Image (tube, rainbow, N blue to C red; front, side, top):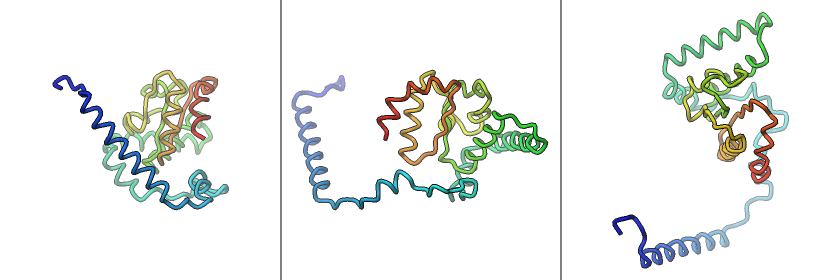
Length: 187
């Protein structure tokens, strides 16, 4: 009707269509061959245990994605930020938080499928680990999360299960316990 509500006949027709689609999907599944036994392990552990991620090549699309999603001004600002941290590193003056921030930026620039989730991200969080991420990569790749660790850890698990490489920064790791339902359900 004009209020967007199904009539009983429309609901019956939609239910019949959905049930036919489900029946077809089950038939397809029943008639399909079983996947190889080692497929689950290959999908869950795609990299060898001794993989050196520092030597892993960037995805072929990285440069194009970065050019389209990071403005020249943002790229210049992050370049200056990284150069300042490299200089501090050379003289042994880099803090742990700055080293972590450097690693986050290097990886987010190297691989656009890398995301970060943190609370108060726009301000750099409490410890500065995700500093300048949202300003550089935008709100989708650098999500300023609500104070609900279970929510954004669960969101990150979903991203990882779909091929993304999420980084989760918790201000206080004690609150990670609130994500146990999401963690235990994902594996």
